[in-house]
Image 1 (cartoon, rainbow, N blue to C red):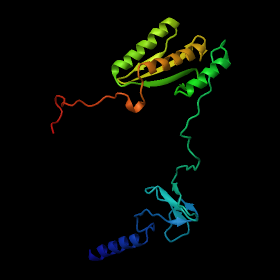
Image 2 (cartoon, rainbow, N blue to C red):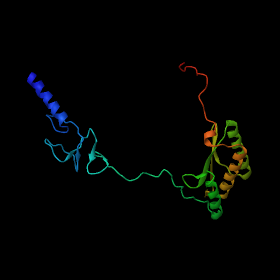
Image 3 (tube, one colour):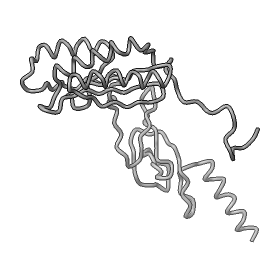
Length: 215
């Protein structure tokens, strides 16, 4: 019994001092430096790198920086997408004066408007200090929309309003969208629009809600 225990202890010590080598039927993962990778294990030291499926990575040798290589997983060094996404191509409604729409769009883009994902509309978020001003701004736009017979999609929050203009018939961005977007900018200025950081936001109640833990 003592002999078996001693043999087991020697086997464990050997695996710790020489990681990655087969000891009996136990395989210990390792991290070895080598110029090539191998998916097979060897019972003696070999210049081929042992890649452990448990560890899932090895290191390449011969570079100033060690590059991780994932086992059984493709690895790409290609750069990711740019943080600044390009504007989609604008799609102007058929029958519109394209040059006039383009000029109006350019001025709006400089004021914070952006093209939607389809390039057939423009959108912007306006921020206000109170919910009342947010709703009042929406009513100002709604009144002008009724006069022009051209309506937007608006989402009202406690301190902001999302506005999206597009033309449905014929589909695309039209001069009406440009004119109404300009009206939005003018109305927001009259209503005291502020920067995003100054807009009203939801806050936790100052009194504990029923059932909430007391401090």
